[in-house]
Image (cartoon, rainbow, N blue to C red; front, side):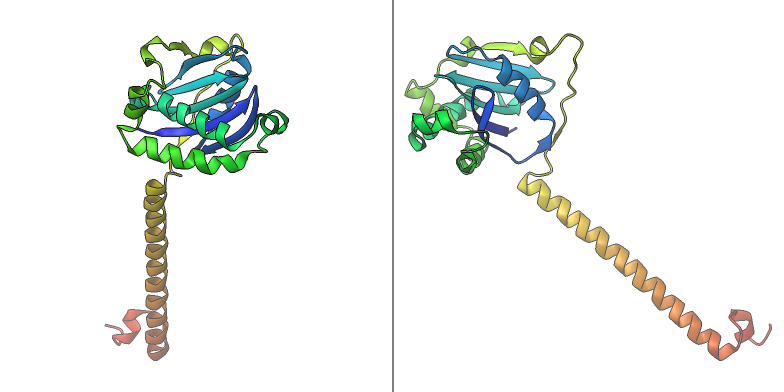
Length: 214
């Protein structure tokens, strides 16, 4: 259970984003961004086993993608936190003039807060106590298929091997297999050299020759 992807956009223009995974989920993200109404809103879109949550205020969209088992309280607390930090870091003038990814240095903050909210199950409690997020039960949930073109179908693909722990495991497996292949190669070469040495003494490359033709 974790947050997989986070972004800040002005309309459909992504200003900053971060993910530790790979996949085609940005295709779904772009489809959602293009359909978000200009008025302030909060909503969740369902796509396979993942949820896309967003907060749209004053023309800016704060969005994240998470496992469906992660619930909605923590993702929306994360979005509220990102919204406050983003507006603190940048003036409205700079936000309005920034082209695509021009504020992507903010991705470091998105990354840090994604890790914090993913690993701390009580992360959303303080926000809720302070009244900074609405009850998530009042936030509309839609199926992502309603915003796709008729007949269009997106099969969401997510590869989480870029997660630090999983990447470490994959690296260890890769190194183990590489070392195993090297040892097998060394063993084969050693046997071949021994065979050549024995053959040179016997005069013929067979064990029968060494045994005197028994």
